[in-house]
Image (tube, rainbow, N blue to C red):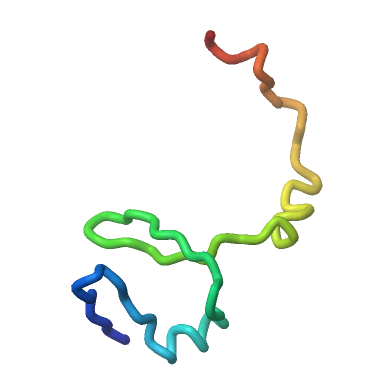
Length: 70
């Protein structure tokens, strides 16, 4: 387990072993997701990484704007 310190400017440094384990690079966008008493730090996927993610999804129970409440 790695630890880091929150700076006076509310910045953190991600430990090298964590960056290497997840192959995170400088300039990569990350998002904080609140989880209980902590947060998860998750990379924001690129559009290219999302391409085809819904391939084969069942569209039979699809709702569009006409089905929503006003």
